[in-house]
Image (cartoon, rainbow, N blue to C red; front, side, top):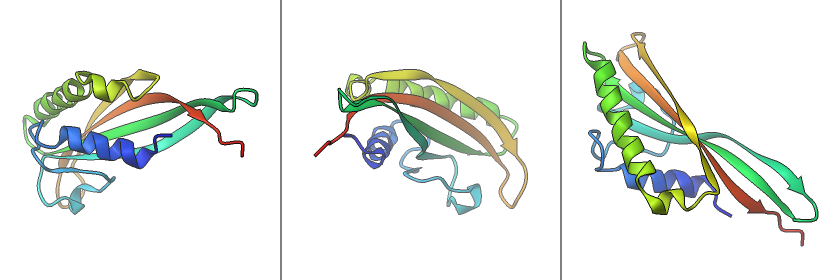
Length: 141
């Protein structure tokens, strides 16, 4: 069984140094004011569920929502910066057979961009959500 911590750590390792944020990639959801510098990437897994549990098979299909937040400094080109970093992330993850092979399926992605001008540090925020599916055996012993 793959746990969500291992998935997050794997994604952080893959993204560190391979996007415009450099090493500013963390395994946590944080607020922009907690970040020391921007741009930054935050990786977390807010939801997961287990479906189609068949007691005869002792397992089911587990879906994990992997969320990757990109925070960039507010500027006139914040949307372009988010687009560039999001493309780098998708290239790193979808271009890696060893990442994709961990899962039964990767259900595409959704992407959102917004500008948050509240608080001390206005930021552009991009959220990339990937639906990861894997078969999970249930230990009946």
